[in-house]
Length: 182
Ligand code: ATP
Ligand code: MG
Image (cartoon, rainbow, N blue to C red; front, side, top):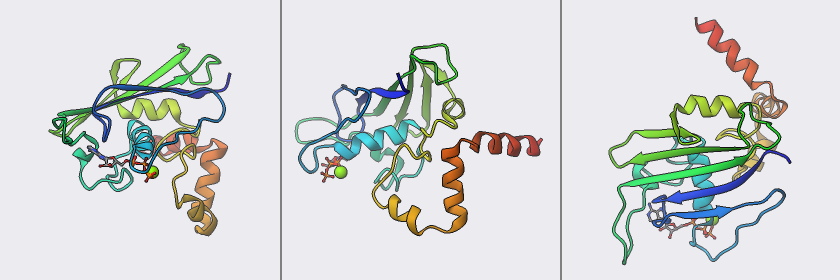
């Protein structure tokens, strides 16, 4: 079984006030629905849990825009939480679990909390586990509208960075940089 996204759980994230669970299978999955029904909010949630900090990339103007802002029938929420579960039966991630769950939580006061299989962790821990898998906020597992153009028209250094990320040598570069800092 390849490494694949098995489940996304949202609670208080953007338009998803109530806790919901979306199951995915290996292979191609499609999310369909009317305009404004929350399809892009689901991909925003995946980016966000993977550490996206840019409010613009999350289509908002301030950090707390990811928290449910209220509707005619529901009060605004004080917290947003997203979990994504990856199937790791083949141990493609360097962890001895057949399912790996990443969670991010944020309160209106600011600060985000991250969890790995329900245990508090740092965003850095999540990023290290995912490095070289192509999964990550800057990995190419998420291709946004306009990004295809960026790849085609980008400068050669930018294209090189994309190839390096997909070829899986970013980890070594990141470690080299860390080592040079010491
Ligand atoms: P399209 O087909 O047009 O791309 P979509 O299904 O991708 O639509 P989204 O962009 O995911 O739709 O959802 C937009 C909806 O999410 C809007 O109605 C917006 O009001 C709502 N929304 C976004 N942020 C919040 C928030 N913080 N609280 C409540 N609702 C929100
Ligand atoms: Mg959309």
